[in-house]
Image (tube, rainbow, N blue to C red; front, side):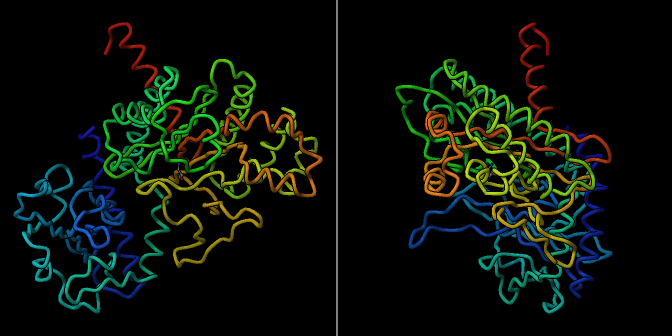
Length: 452
Ligand code: GLY
């Protein structure tokens, strides 16, 4: 793995330099300064929040735990890493830079954050400073120039081969942990205990995950971002929805699976239908596919499932046109993924930062671009039974088109969501998630027969 990353890294950093050259030219700057990010503290307290490295910084090097460090890039020069390793016996000090990436930087170790000032380019007016306000260093005040940021965000959508390896590993870690969570669910564990099983299998602490895990038993699946984690299982377990990822050197996976309890065959039928539809949407992650069109297509397919399985009496067509499908599928089909779980640039039309509007009546869609090779997206259709949205539907003009007895019977299951991370290529898409689950299966089978 390290050998593979080492062989791909030179091209990756060359790509970042090219992008930085163009971004600086677009903004009229000579130097790019990127802060790794500041440590944040709770209000009127000396307790820190978990540190999160800036995505702009970790794009350049696989370092995710180095607050108050800086990357300095001047076109034509070797990038400089100003790396803070404080003399500190209270906290873990960031490890000394080493590995395949280190030789690509001039590395300056500093012991105090303010020592960076002497090492930064002198002409501050010529610097594009990408940082949060808390990372201000003397007169080096972050300006985050729009032209520079827009350029970099637009290009972040196109993953290098190095990044695709990172994303594959993040998916494998996530799939392994999902298997453990599924097993814990079948053992009747609580949401909290399922979460512990997940973390153990991922070998990651909660703060290392790309987002807070969504672990839902029964009707909790109807809360799209449910993160409460009940300590005890309910008396009756009907269903399980888990939306959880893993990180690898700062790259994310984002995976959702839904399971029915053995007695809930009616819910299993719904899961199977959504799963089949989801695979078909994944197969459509092709170059030149408009993502908003795919989202609208998903509405039609999901509405047809609702009709066929007896939840609605109207045609799929009218369910979509009237907004009824949005009561059951009230979020976007997916988003870019990479260094951030909701990766940047999803609405950008071009490097200048013009945007592509969301389709009317679809406010939660996070991606409006047309797909191109090297973009990585999530595909996450869902059908939910959300009290708040169903109440609105009941009061609305289409109430008579809903089979309420059937809908009410499904409220206890919460909802179904199936989510994979998919790479758009020049030809068939690469499904990182399904591949990762298949590899986990192979590993389990191999260990059962005593193999590697
Ligand atoms: N999977 C969590 C999210 O996309 O928000």
